[in-house]
Amino acid sequence: MKLAELGEFGLINRIAEKVAPSPSVPLGIGDDAAALLPAPGTVTLITSDMLLEGVHFDLSFCDPQSLGRKSLAVNLSDLAAMGAHPRHFLLGIAIPPRIPVDFIDLFTAGILEEAARFEVTLVGGDTCASQAGLVISITALGEQRPELVVKRSGAAAGDLIYLTGTVGDAAAGLRDLRQGVREGFLVQRQLDPQPRVAAGVALAEAGLASAMIDVSDGVLSDLSHICELSRVGARLDLDRLPLSPEYRASCGADPFALALSGGEDYELLFCARKERGGELQALFESQGLRLTEIGEIVAGEGVELVTASGSSYAPELRGFDHFG
Ligand code: ADP
Ligand code: MG
Figure 1 (cartoon, rainbow, N blue to C red):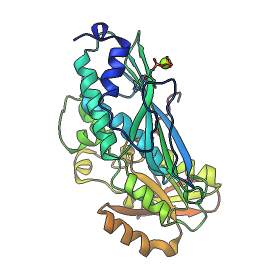
Figure 2: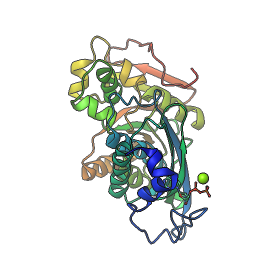
Figure 3: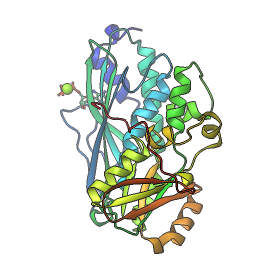
């Protein structure tokens, strides 16, 4: 079926009828605005991420269902990095007429599958026709008690720096996709990022993270954001960067380039006081998630890259910058 046959309101209804009701949404899709019930004692954390065809995704190698999951996942990752429980989201889509209804059905199924997994409810959005590429804009809302929200600005000299999971995989996966590879761990990491929601919430609620960010633009760029906002510097131990076996096998002579500057891994990068190391290890063991200490916050500014041999490393690539 073509979108022209379904029409704007047909499409909205088609999405709305698949949305499960939620007690925190007394009024959802269908009116001029939705009404939400916040949990008592919480602040709302709100974040927005746009995905543009040709910039963030390529329809020649990304299937609609994964695209749906990823569109929501990148927003949930931002909420995770604040330590917030994700609750609701809005979906804006601008769709070129060439896209079939089947595609939108699969895309919606992917989004709602991710939403069910993280117990977030679609509460509204906007739908337009696009004269250019497909545009997806999601705004996600989360909640947390105000004193538990983790900002980028709380790191202090002496804090240790940690990463969840592994880095570099998603960028290596994108490189593989562009070379025609269509499966494997790295491709999966690019197409289907896993937002670290449970870890982010647990870190916040245990008061363990002094500062936190999700790795969307690359470790180097994202750690620099923490340093700037916390007015500190960092010493990053390159030999400790958590790299997957698949990444190591494919990275060639320079194992650090994509791990530092590739981005899109959606892991959490956070700082914690040194004396909380034992608690952190226990928390991550219970979560079954890999945790790696990768360096230390120092007085001053900037990120210094060090290796075990003491040699310095000057990265060729910067993190992703839309205008850079
Ligand atoms: P208005 O013209 O008043 O902005 P719309 O006709 O755009 O309203 O939307 C009607 C209803 O459908 C609203 O509740 C809106 O939030 C919802 N909606 C529109 N597009 C989407 C979408 N892509 N996903 C979910 N809800 C949507
Ligand atoms: Mg509208």
